[in-house]
Structure formats: C-alpha cells, structure tokens
Image 1 (tube, rainbow, N blue to C red):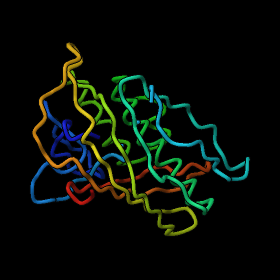
Image 2 (spheres, helix red, strand yellow):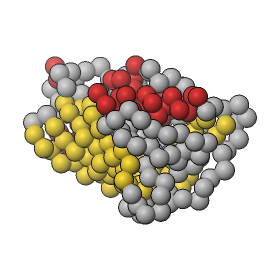
Image 3 (cartoon, rainbow, N blue to C red):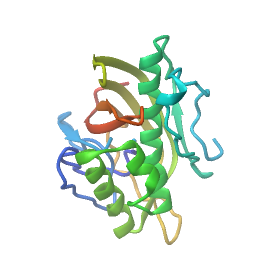
Image 4 (tube, rainbow, N blue to C red):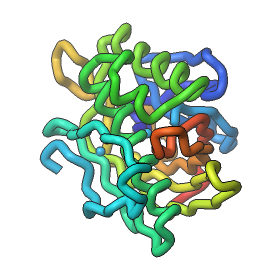
Length: 217
C-alpha cells in the first residue's frame, strides 16, 4: 500500500499482522528485510488501459466492477503482455490490488470483491490488514505507481508475479479529520512477489504475496 501506511506486516500466508498509526504493506526496516502481504488505484479508478482477457467466454467469470473513489489512485505502468495467459494473470492481479484498496476505503474487510480475488491465507491476511485500518480509524489517499511486472507461468493453472511499487505519492489519513498521518520518511519503493492460481471460474486468484522494501526504484 503506502509508505505512510507502514507496519511490520508479517505472514501474508499466516494470519497475524501489526498495525500502528503509520502503517504500510511491506518491510519498514532499513535492512531491506522481507515481509508477507495480502496479495495491493484517476478520478477514482485505476489508471490502466482496458485489456481483454482473451480467454474463451465460458472460462471468464463475471468480474466485480472495482472503481476507486476520488482521492486515491493506482497507476499501472506497462501492465501488458503479448501472451494471452500472462495478460489474464496481470488483469486479475491488478484487480486484486484494487480490491484491497477499495475495501480499505469502504472500511469493509468482508467485501465480496475482496473475496473474489483472494483465497485461503491471502484472503485472511488481507482481511486482517484492512481490519486494522478500520480499528485504528485510518484510510488512504494519494497515488501508488505499480511498474515492472513479470509473470512466470509455473503450470497450467499456477503463476507467480513480481512487480514494483512507488508509494512516494500516497499517505495514510485520519478517518475522522481527513488529515494526513505524518510519514516516517522510509523507503518508498517496494518489490512484490505474488502467487496466483486459476480457479474453477477462470479467475487468477491471489493465494499469497510477499514484499521487500527498498528493492526497486
């Protein structure tokens, strides 16, 4: 998420996380240590060209419409592939990230769109993460830039995705006042590694994710 939303978010494939007044997905330490995360944002919608999934109609589920409200934006650079399967992975991973951010903004850890794109431990961890924002009266504002995505197809229905995030233009806010939470001045770049599986609906769901702060840029 954002560097001003920083936490020691441990075990995206477990259920525990710590959330403070200045929290974020990824590692807050200066040593570039690894954290696990839930598997991630113009005028309220993600900035990316519409890209067809290229999957046969009977393999494409009805995706929920995810539109981020004004005040928070995710920008996806080069989130495109010439390979149709890789493009499907990118499309669903993008919407998985948007679903997390929308759930934070809606203050709804049980949002249907979140469960649509996350499964198993990744879903549990995402719900815990979002719940921390609700409990601590925090939200998010600004913009996050996602870039340098790389898909690796591991099997017919399994893939990994690595990418980078630039969180320098995003901030945590106080829900009651709308004021930004003071930043801690940490490294704004984060590298991500997500695992995805294609489910029975034809959706590439995020099953786990890891982050490492300071590894991109």
